[in-house]
Length: 282
Image (cartoon, rainbow, N blue to C red; front, side):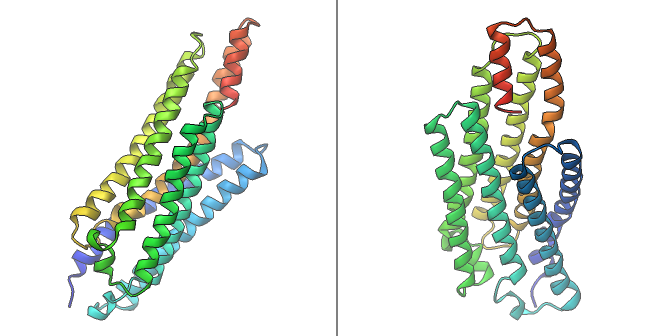
């Protein structure tokens, strides 16, 4: 008989926080479709697909806990011979969600940096590495590896590579956005608060995502094959979805500030330059 608390305790704690963040996601999605009915279909489809993927992810984890804790109350050693199929499917969804969100922010860096190929290439390589390494790591678990072996760092190099790639990608995105926001400052008093808020938003999102992924990596390296890293893993997809939708929703506030400042700006080159900077972002 295995220790249920040791196996499922950390995962269940993470799932509780996951549900809280999922509620935030739903609220943000409703706010988005209410506030931006004129957005392009491509953006609306992206938000809808991410919300649907997040919903499926929550349902899969719920079904996994139902099967393990309710349908099969007594857990024996045979339960741990393979990863639950729901957990494997949830890994697929998380990998795809992370790649979609990182691609979105990569496009944002492309626009803000006025098509800086070097920065976008680094971000693109890191995001693609995360995607490929994630699927290879998952394939390792499908082909007969025990769950304890799957979470053992010595046996799963690609899981480590996936997490490191996420940290590099998120850190690069945040650093690039902050750099180009600061570089594009034009010294106008009315727009300076907006630039400052954009910088803070970029830093907060990048740091938060990097912290969660770093915690997952540390748990992976020190957990010794335990399930403890599932706590942060369940949370990660919700943070990525919320970061993207929060970025879209923040345009409502920033556009009001910019429009108000432009209404009082003299028709100079600086005013036009400032407007073009903000239009590329918001």
